[in-house]
Image 1 (spheres, rainbow, N blue to C red):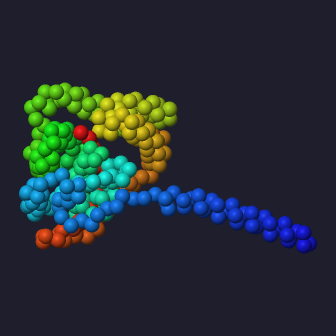
Image 2: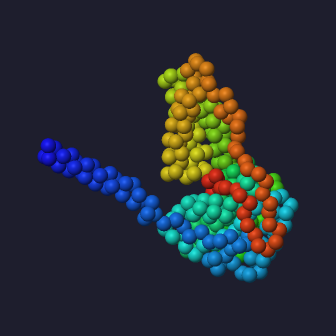
Length: 303
């Protein structure tokens, strides 16, 4: 009897040790992962990397304040001395969401972040402005306004031109330069055309049953690839395409599309994004975000 109790006690100790070890492994990454040290939001233009003149900072601050008063859209410029070994995409999301740029009910914020030491930049766009400031338009602004000035050492001119282009795009006034149209216009048209055709194939695949639907999905994503890689780049584009493939299969299974049965998805697309109450915006020099979030939209670049 004592021997049986001893064995049970031994196994309980062993199981407890294994459980503690597994819990330790699960917790270890969270205790060793360091988030970017997001600074406190104090102004619309925060030049922590020291690349802008005081005159430029004041001019941009005034322009962005007026733009916010006219449109309620909130744009912030932040330069960082270091990305702390993180990607500029991850850092921009952390900063955007910590500062809560944009109104909570509209998510109409934009963050222009510049990391001169890593020579990286990104325009991060809130969900509510993704239609007015698309990823492709953000890419144009980086390529045409920011990068040329940065390459020539004119940081003041580049940031000013970039901010002005962002505001003009949101107002619907920004168009690519003539040089940009002549060198990239045809390519962009081809990319958009393939995107439309690929999107149509992908949409049709939702209603095609069995193996035929999978074939339609694959064909649609292949045709979509030029647009996906144009927006996300070749490496990330493959990951996005794979995620889209599994997402489409999940939607078909979830809604019963292409299976001849009832979709059972009433209200699946009808709810939209939830929104909280209106938030007031500070009109004083002490400035703060309005409760928005980034949604991960935008474009990145280097020089």
